[in-house]
Image (cartoon, rainbow, N blue to C red; front, side, top):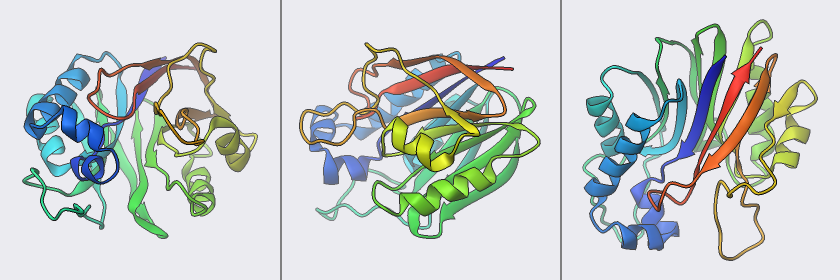
Length: 235
């Protein structure tokens, strides 16, 4: 049994370009980065997948969590601020896995139809963990096919990430070999919204060849525009 989690921590440039409310709330990005790192440092989950990790945020994680095994995929695309400026010293963007136990990297790749999204697969504690961030448009079809291919046929596999689409759509695309964790009926959303019709439940814990239970969403008190989703993997 292991516990796992996923969190889109919101790259500062994306915040300024698409959700300025977070940037306004946290005028000091270094303070927000420290708050994100502090949250992760206190979490008991053995595997944590993170999306939209800036270079500054990754450096903070590596400094504060020196006892953890941290794996990162750097995307070829570097986010560009619409206003031409950013408080980040290192604006590169990464997909990250934070592990309690050592892991062996299997795959680290951006999707071939989106250089700012991708998959990071690690083998650890007898399972394969795939962190991912999927594009929020029809390009997702190809990306979900690729994720299904990466799921190890001879190992239990856990997929963690921001899929940018609802549970039913993800489950249908991946097929019957995969189980997408159910959240309680009164669950907080993984991506709260005040407008628009897009699903508020777009971050998922998905398994193949094992069982997932006790999926829960935890509010992150404004540190990001996404909340923190966690679950227990058994079997």
